[in-house]
Every structure is written in C-alpha cells, then in structure tokens.
Length: 553
Image (cartoon, rainbow, N blue to C red):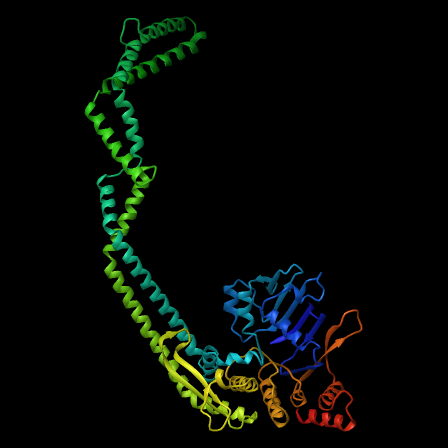
C-alpha cells in the first residue's frame, strides 16, 4: 500500500506531498490542472523513462518519493537476492538531475531500473483507458485466469518445473554440441596425446639436460683442467699441499715454544684440512668426468624432441607440455564417456519434461474447472455496468510446446451486442467497454489474491447515471480489501470515496503551479455539487450532493 507520496520539481508541480490511506481514494479537479501529471510522476516512481523536460525548475533535480507498506507481498527473498535492506515500510525514490541523469533508490540503496520495476510492479497497478488495451494480450489473460482460479501454488510449482526442464534441455543441447566438437577433434587430440605420452615428459627435464650437455660438450677440456688442478694441489713434489703442510709444521713448532701464535697455527691447520678435502674432491671429479660421445648424442636427441614439442604447442616449459597432455587425456576420456553422458542427459531431460507435463496438466485442469464460473462472473459484472447484452467466453487450447505460463493457450472472447458471436477482445471491444471489462476482471480477482495499489484513470469513460453509481459501488467494495486511487469526472463515483483529493491550478506566482488538497466534508459536498451543476451550484444541487454523499457511505 502506498502511504505517502512526495513530488518535487516535476512539470507544474513544485512541491507536493500526499498522505494516503487504505480504501477508495478519489481524485477530481479542473481540466488540465494536473491529474495526469500526478500519474506521470507515479509512473516515474515505477521505473518509466525519464527526460529532463519534466523539470519544473531546470536548475534543480526532480525527486519522486513513495513510502510503501509491503508486508504480505512476499518480497523478502527478492530483497535478499538483490542485497537490499528489507523493511515492511519501504521507501522508494527516483531522481532526475538537470543533466538528465536518472537514479533510483530502494531504502536508500541505489538500484537499477530493472530491479525497481520488478519491485514496484507488485506494489502499484495503474490502469487508464489506453492501458486497458493490454487485456487483449494472452499473457495478461492467463494471469487473470490463474488469479481467479487461485492457481498461485500450482503456478509456482509449474514455474520451478519449467525452469528445471529448460535447464535439462540446455544441458543436453550443450552436450550434443560438445559431442559434435569432440568427434571432430578426437583423432587429432589422440594423435597429440600419444605423441606427448610417448615422450615420457619429466618436470624440469630441459634444465637438467642442458646442464649435462654443457659438461658433455666440454668433457676433454674439463677433465684436463681438473687433473692439472689436482696436480698443483697434491700431485707433485712442490705441490700446494706439501708447501702448506711444511708451513703448518713450522708454526706448530713455534706454538710449542710459546702459545702467543696459536691462533695463526690453528688457522693454517684448518686451511690444510680444507685443502686436503678440496683436493680429494677435485681428484674424484677428474676421475668421473668421461668423454662419452654416445651420451652426448642421446642428450642432444632428447633435447631436440623436447624443443620441437615446445615449439609445436607454443609453450616455453616441459611443465606446460605436461599440462597440455593431461588436458588432452581429459578430452579423450570425455569422448570415450560421451555416449553414457548423452544417454544420462537425455534421460534427465525426459524426466524433467514428464514432471513439467504433470504439473502443467494439473494447472490446466484447474483452469478448465474455473472457466464456467469466471465466464459467468465477468458477464454478470459487465451487465451490471451497462453492457446488457454482454457475452464473455474463454477459449482454451493446448500449446504446441510448454510455455513459461503453462501448456495452454487462453483467449478471452467478448461480444457487447445481442446475436453477435464473441470475438477476441482486441478485435471487438471499444475503449469504454475495455475500461469496464478491466474493472470487472480486477473486481472478480480482488478477493482471490493480494493486489498492489490500484490506480484507475478514466475507468468511467462512456458511462453515466445509474451505471456510474454501480461502478462506484464496485470500486467501494474493492476498496474494502485493497487500496484504490481513482481519477474520475463523475459525481456518482466520486461520492463513494473514503477520501477525496482535489487538483487545481495556482496562478498566484510567476508560473502556474499544480496543487492538490484533501477536501473536508463541506468542501467535498461543494465539489460534488459543482460536478453536478457547474461552477455556481444552487442550494438544491448542494442538497443533492449532500444526500448523494450520505447514501454512498
């Protein structure tokens, strides 16, 4: 329910605030005073397109703000999914800057227009004479049919089953497409995998082979130099070791005479030990280094294989080749499991469709059972609204493929004239008839589901007198269960409102400003009298207006 509305800097409105209550709220006023402007502002709040030309003052931003009581609309899950703060009293705001930038907020959190529309379409429903043409659309007709039949739970189950079926079909379609790709690639993938598998790749192999190659290619010179180094250290009469050993003995003898030079003696002794160890290792290396042409050829051949594979697969390391090999193995295994996977996907899609058809048939059955009562209910209401020869029928048939709303194609048929066969709504109903049909549908489903705030504009088009009074009665009855806001030019309807607002033009400033005020009891009587008898109503007309207001309560 819309409890408060603020409009700032919009067209002829500089600043307007409305406190709204439940029940039927009537809005009347001068022609061109701003009743349609009010609807336009609410439309912006619901996510309609914004333009800078709507600004009253081109230097200031436009703000439309609505406070809604949203308990009972089951919006908690949606708010959580969109990371919005849920509150039973929710503030929705739309801003249009002088530069034309539009922003929307829900409880002070910025949202996209798509999110805004998904929320507000459940909170407010605007109907004008022009919007009633939507009655001719199949989707709207199915929604009305299901609302009357009380199919909320069945529709929810069907929607879940439809989603599951579409997901299963999509998975199967993707797998079939992937299977085609795998079949085309399989032979080549297997060739590549076998080549890499045969290569027996080892992590970091190139680095190790390149080190070995450096030794093998220079083995003769390396061996010669290690032998010479060994000879210099230990293998000759005047080797380094013999000289250091002699020096160490000399310091040892000094140390025996006095400990003052012990540190030097110890250091030289440590050098001697390290040189002996180093000499031994150099000698061992000299013995191990071999001139091996066969191994040199093997290393070169192996590196050649690895270099070619790296170039072929456009990578830089053996590790990357190993990754490619494992990916190819996975693709080959996937291909080998393809038939089983396809069979499983087909079975899942078949099971999902069987479940969908089951829930779809249950939905269809309730629709078919509800059709006679719905036809009679709508026919009776529109007859009460002055279409005395009304004939309303519902045609239901099976769709070729399941749709998001069921297995059925539903068509509303209507005739306003005796002896004329009912035809699809979009082909036969006039604007005034559409308006009364729309009211009839809303009235018929009002007790079946939670409706948002209903706003009717020109719902009274083409009627007067007793028919207008009956329409007012229907609106009043609907207002006992839902919040209704009705813009009307008929006193018979205006009298039924729980509240009455009057829209007028204020010419006391440099620019004409559109204003709205809530009428007191006496102001209401005068407004009804003026709607009956013109600008200066007589006492009898005022008395008539007072009596009309009293009888309408």
